Picture 1 (cartoon, rainbow, N blue to C red):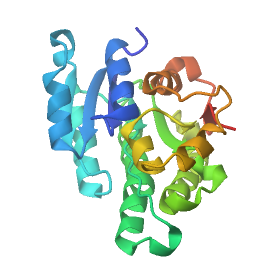
Picture 2 (tube, helix red, strand yellow):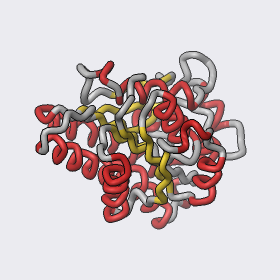
Picture 3 (cartoon, rainbow, N blue to C red):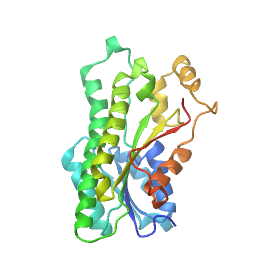
Picture 4 (cartoon, rainbow, N blue to C red):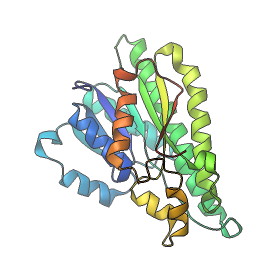
Length: 253
């Protein structure tokens, strides 16, 4: 098992890609903190948890745009399991609207969750990892962020999402250089069209946006959240020990 005796935090873990990542890390032997702002969905995930995994899974209600809550999230992982090795930043929201109708509150909400939330999680994770290293503990030291093809396609009806995706990629590249000498790796998974609730919110009820997105998918199909989770788990593991500051695309061109 690649993550035996390791501890990971996964944000956005109550659904979609985050849930798939958290589940796979559990299967791979990790202690996993399931973090999400949606208390109802998170409670349902915990209730459905196989008994064999229950002792290694811990739920935390967390708004990733709130620095104090993010700091408390990392502290919870350390206090519960005694160590913290990997952060998977999968929390995200999307708001679909024509640019001329986009409201300031909706713009702020997406940027706060997707970009600021990723920044806060990366910062808090890196600080905790550095502190453990300073105390002589050998950690895995991997952070995985999520962008998507919106970063380079400039999709007009999800402008805040586009800006956040591009920002996450630049943040990841900058932080990867900053923490490389400390042995902390930071990489991004840039997803294509993936079958999740977020995709349905992004494309709306019409066919035009969905078909436009599908035209970018090299394999001619949607990705599955479990497929994306395998990429994230690889990046979080020691198998990717030579990789940092990388943007790994999944399906789109």
